[in-house]
Length: 150
Image (cartoon, rainbow, N blue to C red; front, side, top):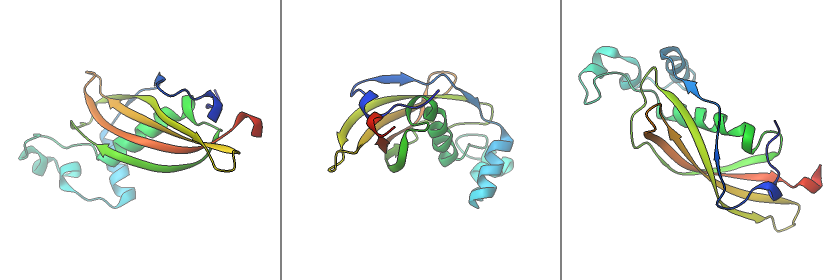
């Protein structure tokens, strides 16, 4: 399913993304390895057991990156020029191995570029776990193709 062109985004529209993903220990380990993040709270079971969380946490950047991926099919798949920014990122609750996350995006702003050939769209992305608890949120701004550019 292709993403939306600039003209198809409506300010105030909320998209509940259908894809979900259960995060495994392996997912978290590989992400930490690839990004060279050796924070023991993500990787060391013994260390993490002594924290307020009692167990290892999933890397917050992995949670955010996965959420972006979950949103792409219904927003920017094949219609994006570039991601411009990720702003106001927060992680209000932890994510643990075995949690299943999903995302929803609300279009908050849109405007044409100065040359009128493309558009800038900002979406507020909320990431929820299997208990519908908010675990991450951020604003994603993209440069989008216009339908007339097809």
